[in-house]
Image (cartoon, rainbow, N blue to C red; front, side):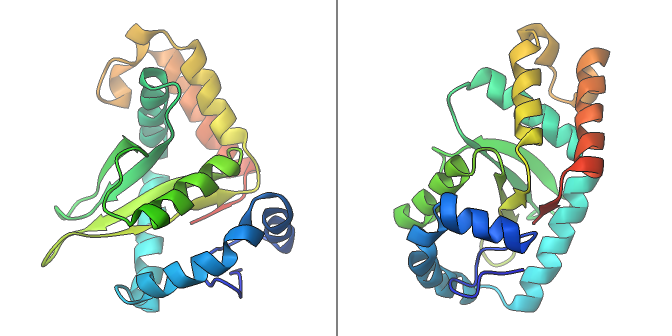
Amino acid sequence: MRCSGCLSMYYCSKECQRRDWMHGGHRDSCARRRKLHYIEQQTLRTRDKSFLRALMDHDYMAAKEEIFYRQVKFMRANPCDQFYVVFDYSGGEVSITVKSTSDNPGYSEEHWEDYTSREEESAGRMELHLLEVGGFGAAYWMVPMRSDSSKIEEGLERIAATAGLDEIQGSELQECPRNIRDALGRLAEEQDEEVVYIH
């Protein structure tokens, strides 16, 4: 379901939308987000957005444990930084990276601040995912992933806090010790079974 005011925030339920309005800061940002929504509308049609959102969701599900591993590596190396996940389709196949929110991909300061502050205020219930596509020039689109719980972020933080630095040095998930892979696998299963999320 989508907010009828700003037309840019999506929710998994009425209760989730109500909670964001009352406690998540949407009441303060709804009008500003409507203006930003019109800027985004000029670059992507609704049908394109639906396709790209479905594609990114598919790739997220297929690479979930690898994404979790990269997030844990980022958290361990940058304990005070927020991050976002980039799904880059400009080379054909998707390339997934984790970047610091201090690395603005090109949004206006107002637009970027809106995204990062909403993610921070969500208390682990929103994660920033940036979709990047090539063509006649790079184009990008922020697709926040929202969930009904902060269990996944709490799980990632727990793994990052307990993993030794030597355990998360490899560039790929398969290079890390079995206990870390198992913990990430359990977290992925927990998300599938217990957490409602939407891109």
